[in-house]
Length: 462
Image 1 (cartoon, rainbow, N blue to C red):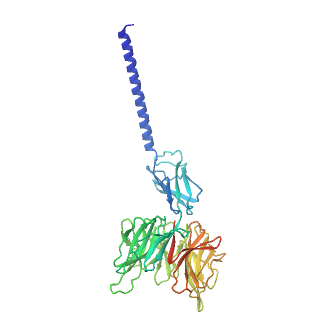
Image 2: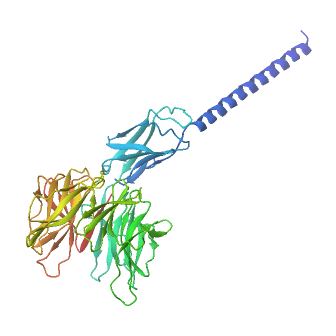
Image 3: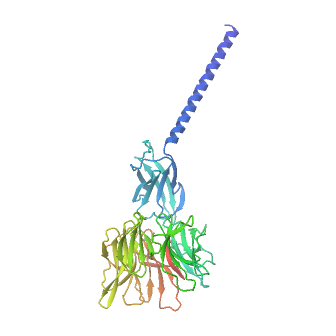
């Protein structure tokens, strides 16, 4: 065979090798492109909340997963948590699956969430394989107001052990009120102005990002209450008099903490209202009508005031997951009177008295996180002091007295998120120049623990 023929064969083999390589590269590129397009078409996860690997997650945090693609909201996947959680899950919108635990998460616990099965895109593509993420919860804290020797009031946080108090607000700000957000990440608080008005500010739970969200130069703005989900809040607004007379009657206003926009809650801007509280699902708003001794229930979905209930001016205490609330009302027996606790169904208007004693003065009822118990305060109707802590079943049975000190006022009680403790304020009326203090009561053991002196208005920071 000639050298020319051998060279031609070698050239043809090299050409075939090049063509084969090009074909392999083209097939590889096509497969890669197909896989990339297939992945793009799948409902990949845009985000989870809490984020995968997050730590110090608040115990009241709702869980959610958001997709890039629209999903079939007519079907619900399985959602499993480790440790196990009793919860409800549903589609918040076509992109977002919401997972809402019935009880707060456990503190300092690692959770793993898995979404599996029956998950489809709006284009009827089935999602295979589990979607998983994990996070770590933090430890609850206690927020409270502390009165200094100089007469300034500051917002503090402290651990339930009573160690390491931390001042969140500056010394020059005189704090007169505050409210912890439902998910625990922010605190709205009210500061007094030199001109007699008040401003509303918001600060993160770790003391960062302290900012003013509403200036009330000509009004007294107080009692902020967060809407479930913490998108906005309601506050009480009273007009200040230029002559120095007491502020005018209260009216409820919405406040968007992001934009600072504020508008009246009701179409009738002159409607007198105070003591706002939301139902757990955010569909109902209860409020008081000053001087009329009634509690009204307003449906935020329909815009109608559906129910009116007699009360004595104490804000409603809503059930942790039902459209039911607790209120107090007065009953007269001849020349004497008693104040009883009632359980009220917001929709049916059914009202049931829970107080077992005929002659009593009950107040400040608070549901346990699982809705099975109610903590409250009570005293002898005509006694000026001596309000004690009590516990009863949700139906009013099995009443138990938790404190017994006629010279001390206790309460109002605040349940810990796991239902093991009651947080409350204590004031000894027999001591001259006494200051209130904050205490914890472990319900199972009956053990008392002092948390802070010269402190009042405690609240759990989840």
